[in-house]
Image (cartoon, rainbow, N blue to C red; front, side, top):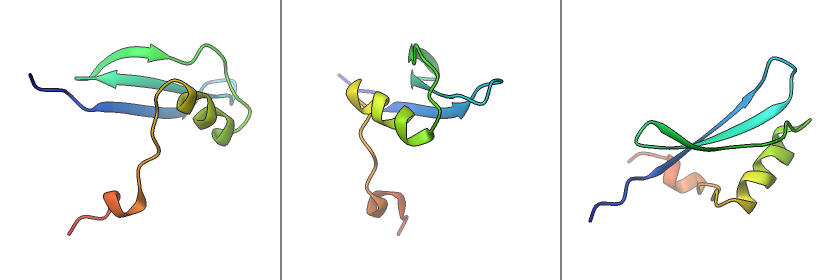
Length: 62
């Protein structure tokens, strides 16, 4: 069985609040219920729901 990678999107809504969305295979499977005043708080909420902060070394392509 192939497991598709989760993709997380963090963005500001029209009111300037930070929101997150979790996508699998380009389909939204979860969203934040609340807006957050800072990106850091938004990421903290996403972490409680399974988001893992990528390592910087994983972002560097060799």
